[in-house]
Length: 116
Length: 110
Picture 1: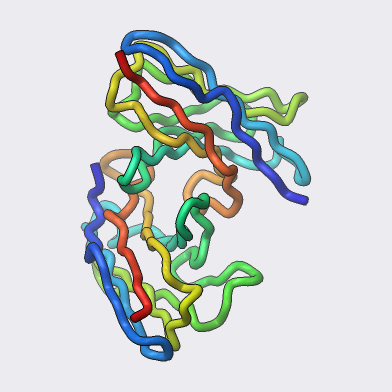
Picture 2: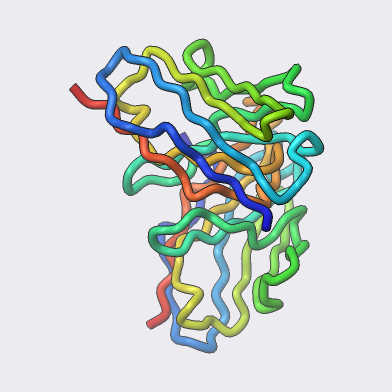
């Protein structure tokens, strides 16, 4: 079945880097734009980034531009989020989702905690 | 930060109609499709409505969306206990060049 599975979330200290992965299955990954969305504990949803089908174009929220990089490997059916200079306010569950505006498939999320 | 405003909570008895508003601006709701998501406790969001009023297969017909100017609404006709969840609207924002989500609304069945 159509599925997205995130991994890589963990506890890190402020200023450190971390890379999240999202494994896609059950659909032709290269035919879809993909996005990252996060949700801080007890808070609402925040769009972070999206990437086009080829990986040539990426878009970022102002809060992460210059610190986060989204990429994809269509041969591996995988999406990535490289995060650097992490801040306490980056603490959240990170979801990957299929689409660039209407997100019709979501993963279960992976938790990133930034704390000293 | 959220640029789409929703009421923090709404409640109704089972069987009643519930309407959740989503207030935006000309750069988002006023000029782009609106989508709605349901997030059950402890789970990932699920798309309920896309392109203003289109339901993906499997979404019950009691959910419907509408838009007027820079505001959109999600209606639940005949609230059921399993509809207790958080609901979020979203839209593309031409000024921010990205997706914006609503502040979220918690729906409670009394």
